[in-house]
Image (cartoon, rainbow, N blue to C red; front, side, top):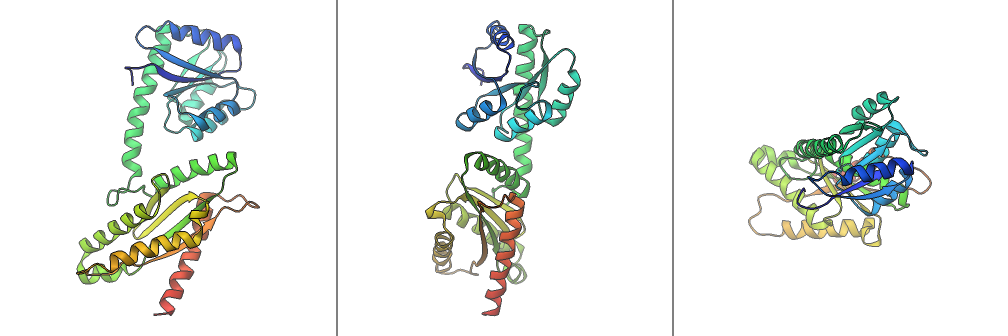
Length: 296
């Protein structure tokens, strides 16, 4: 990261403080910074919807959101970007609260030398990079390589926040693998694991790389994708059915792959969380599974 100018977003409503920060940054000879300045949280969120800086410096006394509220809003919009907060001499307690909320470090206005600023920014970059590496390990399903439940809910929640701001709609699908137990019982758990991995491959083929996929646990999977014409319920089911049929038609298969699916689209009249939509899709999936069993 340090072989090029570090792209920094400064969120500061006081023009004098913004100028002082920019001039102080220029004094740091070890690294170069490319500073973009926004005067409020709303303008910062608009910037982050279009661009991803290397780091963010956020004043805790902004007119449209302050303190921990500002930290949370910015982190929801840019969870992968390290955050340093600015506070006044008489409000160091707010900076400590911001650290507990996820900020990497804080700087006190009036006590900000070039060397202190550089140390704080470099520390924030390095510490955040380590945290992201550790977080990645704890949000990926080891067997399939998809996001695990925690990772899926984190990514889906971030997408939902952005969709709410832009007015876009999305679809949540709950996918449950059928007949895993007979595979485990007759062929062993190694075959069962292979079947789970194959279902994950089916999802990767049927959905786009930008869609959010996850293994929620056991034989349960989920997907979040934009509510476009190609992602209608009929289209999603057709893609899944075609891929499953092609795989099950291969010679020398020891078992067939079968799934039950529940699909829910965001409702313009109601604001549901991703977890609530997952619960709705789970109910629809279960109803489909019961109809399938009744038909056998």
